[in-house]
Amino acid sequence: MKCGSRRPSGKERTMKRKIAAAVAVILACMWTLTGCHTVKGFGEDLQSGGRAIERASGR
Image (cartoon, rainbow, N blue to C red; front, side):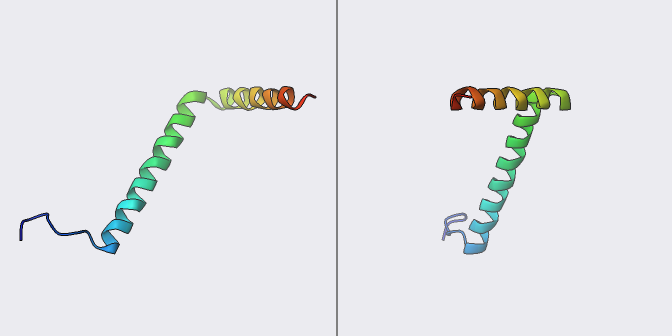
């Protein structure tokens, strides 16, 4: 049997999925936070999103 030719066990697959999910969450958080730069920037982004929703709803 060649080294590395075995199929991963259920535990290994579960662990790989957990690691991939954690990396995805970390990257999403980094992407979100770098877009705002500050708490003030986040507030402005939130307000502009609210205004866009109001315009789309016809208010």
